[in-house]
Every structure is written in C-alpha cells, then in structure tokens.
Length: 127
Length: 177
Image (cartoon, rainbow over all chains, first blue to last red; front, side):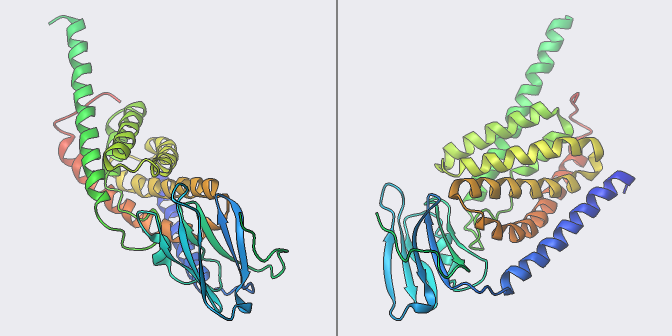
C-alpha cells in the first residue's frame, strides 16, 4: 500500500476499534438515572421516574397525522409496544430502564431516553 | 467525422454511460430496500448502491459522480415510496461524497475499496447528524458506534465489489476525468 493510503487505512482501523470499544461501553455502562423522558418532535412531552412506578400502564404519544407510538411503562422499565411507523425499529429496541441507549422512532420523531436527573421539575406534561 | 460531431458523440456516450450507472445503482438500491433490517438500529444496511458511487468517483469526474448519486437518491425515494427517508439518505450521501472526493486524490484506483470504507463512515455520520437535527436531541449519537462498525464492514464489502468491477471494465471503457 502506498504511503498516503496507509494513513487512511490506519485512520479507518482506529475508528473501527474506537467504535467497537464505544459500543461495549454503551452496552454495559449503567447510569444513575431512572427518569424516562419522552420527546416528540424535539419537545419533552412526558417524563416518569421509573423507580416510582408500581403498576404497569400504557399511553400513546402522537396521532395519525404526526405518527403515533404506544408506550408501555412497567416498574423500572419502558418500551414502545406499538407504532405507526414502517420499520418498527422502536418496538424491536425493546425495554430500556437504564444506560445511555435510547429508543428512537425516526419516522415519528420520537425519542425515549433515561435521564440521570431525578428532579426535572415535571412528572407529566400533556397537550 | 468533424471535430464537433466527434465531441457530441463522446458527450452522448458519456451521458448514456452515466444513465446506465444510475439505473444500476437505482436497481441495487430498490432491491436492497426490500431486505428486512437485521438489527433494530435505524440505518444499518449494506449500501450496495454505493458500489456505483465509488466506482463513478474513480472513473468519472466528481460532478458526474455527484449527478449520478443525486439522481439515484431522488429516484430511489420516489420508487420505494419512502420520501421521509430521503432526508437521511441525502444527508449521508452528500457528506459521504464531499469527503470521498478529496480521497480520490490520495488513493489510487487500486485502493477503491479503502475509499468506500471511509465513505461509509462519513455516510453514517451524516445520517446521525440529520437524525439529531430532526429529533432535536443528541441522544441518537448512541447509535453511532454500532453504525460505524457495521458501516465500515459494509463499506469494505461494497468497495471490494467496486474494485472487481473496475479491474474488469477499465480496459474497455475509459472516460476523461
């Protein structure tokens, strides 16, 4: 391999190794937070402290026009159980209860993430 | 034959060639879109249509390659009916192309496979940046490492495919870059 190409190959190998390491960190890093936050179109529409949940419940975010997702909340965890999007990546992501990995529904612009901030000031916003 | 008609014939030839490449890229794109995603991460795919993109970058001018890419993205969105995905395809494709163009100066035709793998990195970065913009959060970056790992591997694969093609075809078809 010619000299300059070696740099490209080395940079690529570095990216590969770093990404693989990052994947492991993301997978196994816990986070202190237990507050699940639901964002629709970039706005926080709902949040709940998963550690205070005693009974399971479900609710829906969005409508037919905007795209809807049905969210299930159980003690300590949350997931998308049904959605209007094509690929259902959000549903297949499954449960999250801690860590950095979010649940994302790109077509419906929905993001659910676990935040470390136990006191974000609101328990639920609707409308 | 006059000089003028010779030039016109070359232009037509090139246009036909570019149209052919676009059609192939479109076909690859549409077929690949029928394959169900293996992992729940949005954006993980083989990117077979990029075989054509990287091939065009090394055998035609950057503007030609950009034209083929733009046409393929637009037509692909229209044919698959996925207009909403257009945004991410375009973001990834544009960043990928912009970053691969300088790479075509650094790398040779024999190192096309490497360029493709690098392009895959930029493609995924572009997509994630657009996703962050659209969702209004930065938490989507959590998907970036997984996308990069699968992307580099896919990029290597498509790059090797493109490499095979250029090794075979180059003796028969040559255009000025």
